Image 1 (spheres, rainbow, N blue to C red):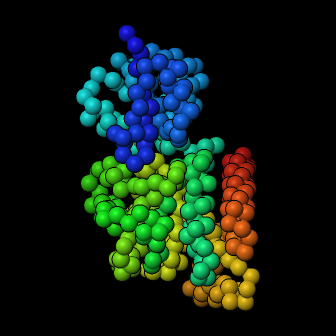
Image 2 (image 1 turned 90 degrees about the vertical axis):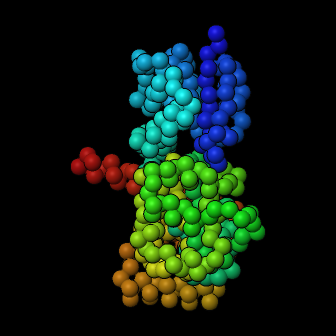
Image 3 (image 1 turned 45 degrees about the vertical axis):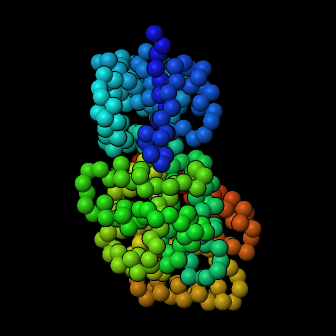
Length: 317
């Protein structure tokens, strides 16, 4: 009797991302293709083999109890209906933070890309950065601009978008994970929610609704980073920036850009948001896009390393 292993790719739709293998050699060939996120594998494979073939998230299909279950693994009884198994997989993601795949113990974060300087390539930079981040972790891109570029940056399709996700989060019917998977689209490895088509709908979203959405994504989704491409159509831009862990500020050195940056800093002071400056990384958009993205990644990683080092010092002191 052949032993069964399955790879579950949590991308657009769960069902469309399942691949079944009947041997380790077949599984190894499959793992060489694409970005695999979760392995469902029989308990018949010993722990050492499971870890060797796939170091990512693993859910072990068992008859009763897996005797050599690793601390990074989750077990699931296999003699159940397909619907019950699928529900168990989703529950495993929601209840156990070990399955969220944060490399190196990195905490989840919200990264905003914001700039009052127009025609500086902010969305192009955001998408390029998002794709680069998505090579190492799960990233969700949200576009909160007046004109997001539907039909250009994003496919022009008459289907669900960010407004629908906000509605589902407000309803909190217990099926948000499934609804999210049906809305999410991809640009390469980067996941994104189709932006709102009417910017007045974007203006109508209260800060409390953004808080609900960000809170749910941080606690319940599979994403390590939420990349928010922020525009001035959103009510209370500073309040959203306040809820972000990092603020990337595309900038330039010409006299008009400098004047807008100066006014932005003045607004921070007048409105009492000076603390945002400490979380802001200015991105020189006069460099090539590739160089701007590479340097931003280096600065993000460098700051993340300092944060972990400082946290370690606080723990031992």
